[in-house]
Length: 194
Image (cartoon, rainbow, N blue to C red; front, top):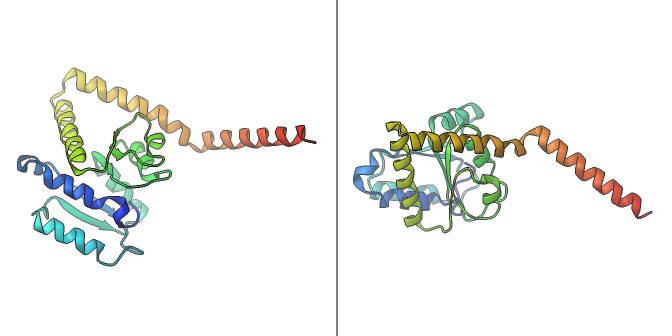
């Protein structure tokens, strides 16, 4: 999501996919969603060249300048959202992905850990090997869910419950409540100072 810039880690995601065993690649269908407006010249070309050199054309597609409707379709299509960013404030796409039922893997940078909470996997580093391992773990979980193992189904129900509870804090009602509480605290503080 957002601009195609090196700090967002698209290259890291591509590196991780290239590290996957060839037998796993048929399971990968990556959509890089964003815009190349205001992006460094040549960055999209660099990514496209890497895709061609590693024969990933069947696995990777660029979806540029989507409108809201197309973006929602992408979230519904996706099983997994990956953020490999080098820095993030409040990462809206993580919240959007969670709200649409996607599993999330993200690098533990900036505010990502508080935005994601316990609702996904945080990578301690921006190393392609770590991301490739996380992707293999996700394949294993998908297989267990598909096979209907009781443990996997219970784990998925637990994840969905945690996610629903976590997302409440980002609702408009919760935001309004916290804002009003902050205003009341500020007013009390100012009144005591008089």
